[in-house]
Length: 124
Image (cartoon, rainbow, N blue to C red; front, side, top):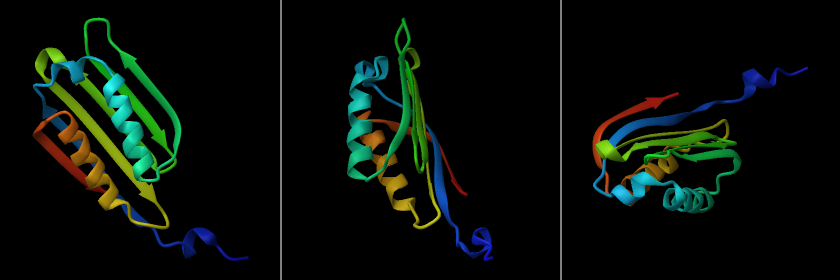
């Protein structure tokens, strides 16, 4: 019997963890517009959702976590500080999703007119 774990070649996925500032207070306060752009990006990149949670906080700001078959993306916002954190990881044993990760990250940054404060890239 062949050991399939050893015969598979794993192409590492890219994980981006970032913090950015944004003057788009209305987009940092509520998840509705962000949910629309996330859904658009997920569809454009042929990704598959397996679960999602969005939550608006009473005094503004929101959190969102979307589980994907490839892993996840998440965002947390603090409109009172004009800040957000964003996290995306796409892992796949059959193909390298590095370009998709970079494109989604750039699209999210553009959507919020974000100014990158810090970004960490981890190749898994």
